[in-house]
Amino acid sequence: TLGETLHARLVSLQQEIALIGEVRGLGAMQAFELVKDRRSKAPAEEETKQVLGHARDRGLLLLSAGTYGNVIRFLMPLSTTQKELALGLDILEESLRLV
Image (cartoon, rainbow, N blue to C red; front, side):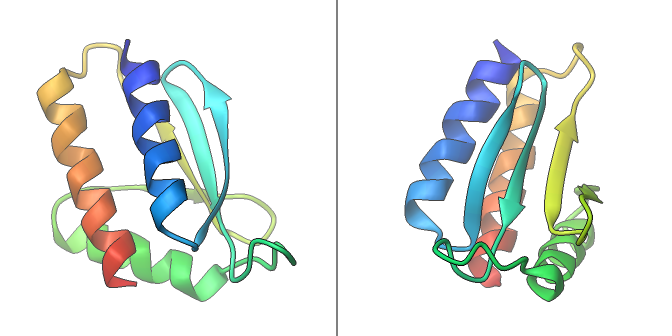
């Protein structure tokens, strides 16, 4: 259920925010890639750092990954509540929109 909620929200954000390239994963372990341009798929390294900083300032710790550090990974505890997940995703969305 957590994975379905996470995936649906990430895909929805992908439709609205051009910075989000690929969304991938399974269950509670998912990730999305930040790109400068969806056509070229050029890694958005600096933008990823900015998103992580904005989220951290709002109390959400995120993990970057990937060769270029432009992938944001999720692996939440299975005890995470829907309310906690929604709050985290709201902070993530706000951070993405700021960047």
